[in-house]
Image 1 (spheres, one colour):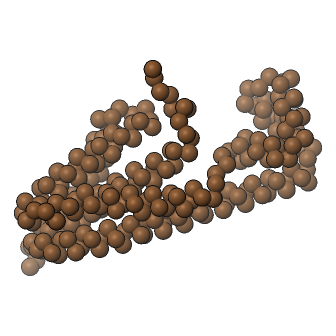
Image 2 (tube, rainbow, N blue to C red; image 1 turned 90 degrees about the vertical axis):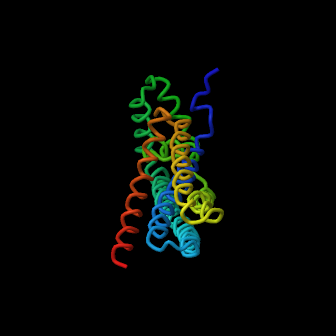
Image 3 (cartoon, rainbow, N blue to C red; image 1 turned 180 degrees about the vertical axis):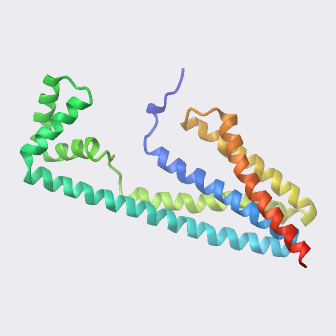
Length: 232
């Protein structure tokens, strides 16, 4: 039996975005940085130290960025909802007419639209919910989701960053480099293809798209490493 998208929790989309973004960014930025450092320095300790610092600092930075952006969006939306609440209180008749027009706009039969408008207008909370959804185009979100998304970003970045770094903890630097690149490229492709569970894109296209982003960072890191060797 086919599992359709609407059968899943609708809040999962924003959380998945944080996980995918965090892991992808952790892999791509760490891979590009430590590959360049490995080529330029040829020193395993330097690579491990640099990679650890990058993962630690960037994971915190990404988590803070996620919290600030999501918190700002939440507060702006809450302000819009409060304004709508005041309009419902102060301009009840106009808001009732507006809701009726939106029901009709959305395709509801006139008789049913009148009944729904009448029912909603008698309940301030229901009226606010309908106006929030239909006029402001907002879905209700909990304040807790902001903190949860920042934590997901933090953890995801660390996990992603460990993909390219772990090889340098196990193998000598010359052997670690191709292993690091290979593991990270596979990880990026898997992450990209996994997102197709929540979209209509074919798995190999999505995987290849994310893989190419990793290759761009890898090439940049490689070139900078080569420049460092040339100017030693």
